[in-house]
Length: 342
Image (spheres, one colour):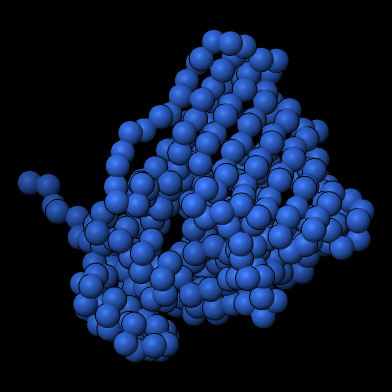
């Protein structure tokens, strides 16, 4: 007789709009027992505990972790809080998932990476672009010998207006909205040697990229579009004639010359015209839950905190280049808590 696997015991920190609408609903699709919910606003914590079936509501994260001793912690509280909450979990050797961005700066993300290594415990970031169904197929195509090494990449990512309040990272277009395409470029193309940015900061950026592999890329990022008609388009070129096109991180087409080779064109309909499977929300949470259950090793988690630190280093190089109007090199990290090579 096969033993029934127990649900993974998860505690969640943060009950804002994004957490409530995008993160907590994933738990219902997975083998999860929500043992605690925490928010500084007790009313929001209690509301989410009732709505999502949590055992208890808290306003103090450390008290929740000590009281519940979960198998994993999910944090969605803004980048300023992600570092502190991740460190709380890692001090207790509890695996931790934080929403993006992982930290305000690359150095702070690297500090979490060091704590993760010292504890021998996973810290990962919710970069959904790495987990979408279309991206799974893209990475498989690019790994095939016939595609050859990536030679060029183009990304256009435009959304609606953001407030760009310098006191609140969650309102900043480049830091909050653009962290996904910047991280996706790192995921697809590998290490980046140099970036050059032309911008009308804080709302529009034209960025050229040179990868360590010798490949080149470009990103056009702007919040001058409209939230009702955002633009998300990527093209990846490999061997002569080999082209991958991605739309909205959901639809994918792969052509060799004029001949179609592969595609991903899911058909779904929900009230919000969205699929949390296709866009990566549920797959990234599934990866975390499987790790907490002991069935998915850290090396099979594509968005570990070390990757987040590298993506933040690219973001910071883009910022520096916009200010200096010169090419800039992303920081590299050694075994210490500082960035080198910037």
